[in-house]
Amino acid sequence: MGRITRTWSLMSDCWHVLKLDKSLLALPFISGICCMVLMASFAVPIFITGAWHPPARDAEAIRQVLYYGALFGMYVVLNLVVVFFNAAIVSCAATRMGGGEPTIGDGLQAAVSRLPVIAGWALIAGTVGLILRIAEDRSDRVGQIIAGVLGTAWTVMTFLVVPVLVIENKNPIAALQESTVLLKRTWGEQVMGNLSFGAIFALLSLPGVALIMLGAMMHNTGVFLACLGLAVIYWILLSLVHSTLRVIFETALYLYVRDGVAPAGFNAEVLGAAMR
Image (cartoon, rainbow, N blue to C red):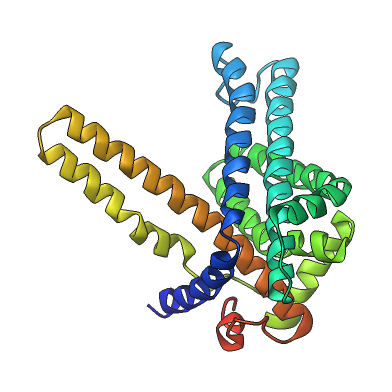
């Protein structure tokens, strides 16, 4: 309950930023559309050829190269798209927290100016993702657990990378080092998240489930489809808000650990308890 209370408080602060720049919701929407198109461009050929499952350890080298090469390409382009649009949100959020009046155009322009470092980071993130995926595919249960732990550690280490890339315009390696140093300096060697964004939005998604159940109880196909459509629209909007609030939070947290003071509109005590 303590984590949920902290999360709700931080989400409220992030929500105040989003209310001032509601157009930011368009960025994760465009990002999601691009990601779905890109995933389909990789997934459809793989599925048609029947090569959707990982190759066996004794499979031909060419098949393994093709499979993991396609996976690597997908990881890189998806990371590129997601980080690009997140970078635009970070730019707008940082400007707003600094008292400015940002526009989506300003955010996209900032992301374009950082495109070389964003591409470099996408390459690094895609490489790490591929290594972890191969470790999971080729290992026994213990190896899969280890890969999962390493993946979690990587997520924590890279938590502030995008704000560093955008605000400081550092290269990907320097941004990774800066993210790690800032987290260690603020919370110590062993850092973990102390928030529950997922739990909050899982609860907020329940009205959509209730809407579908209500439609099913009506025993009318038209009513059920209408309720289903409304639920899907609600979940899409909820996911857009979720994605945007998380990036705003990352930006606020970065400014807090960099400057030692909370950005305007944020509670320093709550931000300080965001990690432990």
